[in-house]
Image 1 (cartoon, rainbow, N blue to C red):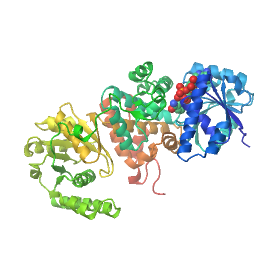
Image 2 (image 1 turned 90 degrees about the vertical axis):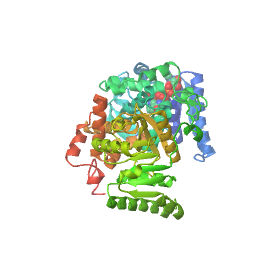
Image 3 (image 1 turned 60 degrees about the horizontal axis):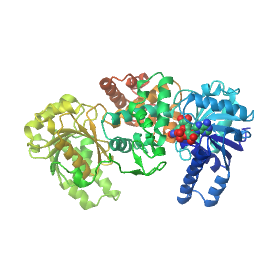
Image 4 (image 1 turned 180 degrees about the vertical axis):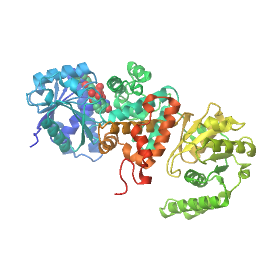
Length: 596
Ligand SMILES: NC(=O)c1ccc[n+]([C@@H]2O[C@H](COP(=O)([O-])OP(=O)(O)OC[C@H]3O[C@@H](n4cnc5c(N)ncnc54)[C@H](O)[C@@H]3O)[C@@H](O)[C@H]2O)c1
């Protein structure tokens, strides 16, 4: 029989604590909510009423239920109020000495059978537990932000946590409507261990002006389907909390440089830019605590006229290649009203590409997304050719041939001879340095990367890759073209992985390392990222879709270019590829797809 929890205590009513109070009270459990001062209690109460009022306004909570929920909360200053609760969750700032002090005090105040839990993200639950005389009743219950919304709870058992306590807490999580993964006490547990290296890397991209905050965030949202970009997420977490988590993970997690907090984070914390809670972090908010981003001095001008500033006029576009990407890109340009010349290496290939474009456009018609006239008009805009000479008078060339540097360089050298002056030459490469391709021509200022995502007609993102030789005019033209295609163009430098792959693949590789270390299972790791962070797919699901061979190749490139030891491909990934387990396409990757 699992233990009944009729009343619980929550200590610290900040970003997490206030949300945790709501989770319990919503599920019919009485809560004693504790802070250090009356003002802090009041702040917590305002957060809770704000959140429940929003739920009522959205029709997700009846007014009577809200009133009952609020009536279950007893607001108090000081830990003494916790003498009769069955369980306490501590959610004070991420400092070991503070948490140890609080646990020693809780041990004194709470009844002997009470379970003492910490919501720490990165500190050792074991070290916190030894501040009490009952370490076997101390456990980690790690909620995710915002606690009322995110389904995941990581239950952290130490080597001394008793099995009964673990079982009771697991049953409690179920009662709260949460999905729990139970794991041992390691820095960052599952989700933060995979998340924070990525967040820190995103901040370093911003700090080094590799890309703007808007572009980094848009890239991850639109390229990976994440609910929010990394910098917006840092603001939600709170930069002070994020700093402490990174710092602890660096010290506890083997001094991986990727967890050493990027200096900018500390500077922002010192300057009081803590994120949403202080009204300003990477972005500026309407007021402290508000989720509404307002314009500030860094907000880019994105109106049509400003975008087209300095751009060359583009009417006729050449697209070279006959694969998946070329086919999708032809459709995108033709639908957007450009005159398109498709160049392949032979009439047979052209016929195949033409068929594929037709099929795709027809699907649009069947789904009611495209009229028959528009389909015919789009097809009518495309000329099918097997010779590069037909590109003599185009305004833009988009190259999407095989991902081999020698082939691309030879092609760009030919384009240089054939195309008129002033043409913008773009490559869709996802991994080769754009500057290598640019230097195969006599006009590197006109060369740029346009990294489309697959499937091009659907994915809204294009990475615009500027080399150190790309001219401002070429960049402006690329930006204007992306806008005209209805895509979000994000501008970045010419570095391995651009924005999306550089941030995504090391995270996937880290997940493989975590599995390899037997810290958790593929299922639990996938759950953690989907239910704790709102990712559309877990890392192992995604690796199987992308292909393990493709993922390994990208990870190797990143490692070779950036020489970051933490980017070394996971041996397990290499072994699976060697064994022919490539993911869905080969029937087996991290999971067996032949049985489903
Ligand atoms: N922010 C997140 O996204 C997130 C997610 C999961 C877990 N966590 C963890 O939750 C914990 C709290 O983080 P947060 O982001 O909510 O911090 P926060 O700074 O928003 O809130 C901490 C609260 O604790 C209160 N406090 C400080 N000392 C206290 C004391 N002695 N007694 C009672 N209250 C005290 C503060 O007044 C403040 O309101 C940390 O361990 C953090 O790692 C944070």
